Length: 137
Image (cartoon, rainbow, N blue to C red; front, side):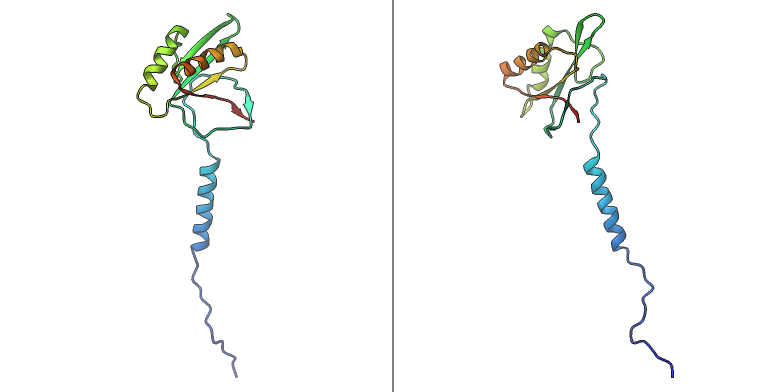
């Protein structure tokens, strides 16, 4: 006498666990990836553990040329520097139609605080928000 099973073994493969894994990987890569900043300048930014998610509409980079002890200002990652007296006019023109006027300052580690404060004063005069860019720790 042969023993028979009441339930049949299903040979089908369930894809639901595979889709869960793919979905979790997708979320992982979206969270861990960072947006590439289009700045063409290589700056050594100070390190910080605090990161802000706000998106500035204009970026101003200050590069210190140590050999000549000069500073060059670049707006939105442009290769050609802008003289400091023209920075204020350019930033105001770029942020004129913005709902939330915000600009970020990318200052090299060797740039004195005085140069950064000069840019912050421009923001204060025109009531702009300012972000000081740092590298993640």
